[in-house]
Image (cartoon, rainbow, N blue to C red; front, side):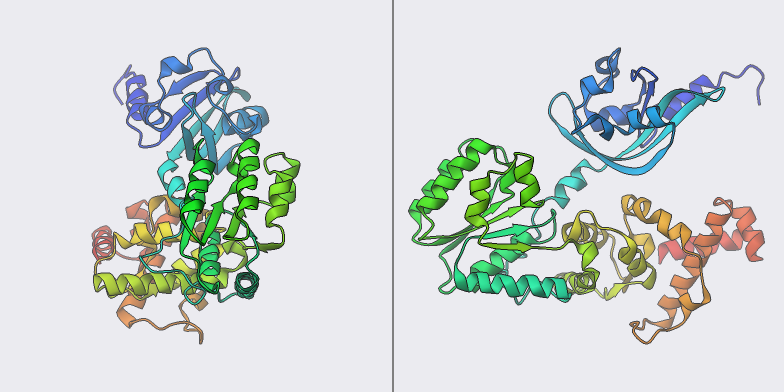
Length: 436
């Protein structure tokens, strides 16, 4: 190393050209580092941050949700945490963060956060499941698990009774599909299926709904996430529903237990009572993992028909990762993930770990690292779908080489020595696997 070389210029270059957002604060909560990528994520400048606490600039549901302040207070790192907050312009931001305390002489002098922007992805996850231009009936809804079979059974009875229905469940569970299934199971089928998106700010939403009801003799109105309406709008909505309750079928959804929502004063009690005659809880994907395989197969079958692809399914490793992930975005998150991977598919027959998007690899890395390679991983089980030998051997080789590389910190020389091959041979095998 050159004598008297100033490393500051290297640190500044690294900070400004990093592909992740970097935000560091001192013990007073004031910003001291705020790189270009973080500016892009949050839409702010360093000048906006000067001499102000992050609680003055960003809005959290509560102060404990700031990972930077939490780490500053506890002195413990917080890794791979999803955080949703709003900047001073009211823009919603969602990131996955790794946050660390910064110490000097064993004393905390601040905290630093490395953030990966998933705002766009998060918005996609909160969108309805795709329809693919076909009506959604109970026959096409994935219901393999006992939990979903029970949901469909109750929903069919609700369609016969023609009573208001309340669907309860997290975002992305498919409540909108159940609502449309009820619509098509009603006899006679109402003229229209109309979705009222209550999470979109529109002062004239109820007024527009009234006009639609007046224009149709019979229709199904699905009020999606009614708890997002203001209490005043909920009162207006209730008046409209009661006026037209004998002519139309009304279905609503909420994201949490309605009793809790009423206690939190975000759901009007009388509006809940209007829908409470039939309440159906749609369980999250993590509680009905047996529905995941058929959902993937339906998606890939549709992909094969449209694009003439040879894709058949996912490898055993990917399936295990999917089974051990908690899917906070439920079926919609899985659908978005499949959409992302489908853009990478060329002549592959199986979706491998390499085809997973980087952001998802980060989410499942802890489980993958903690899962040792066992001999039984390469033994054919009776319930496993067989794949061509070349594909199987390629998967096993890729898995093993990646494990060895992880063990040696991706040092090619050390990994090659451990594998008993030359450095050039290992590089050749890695390039070949990457290109296949």
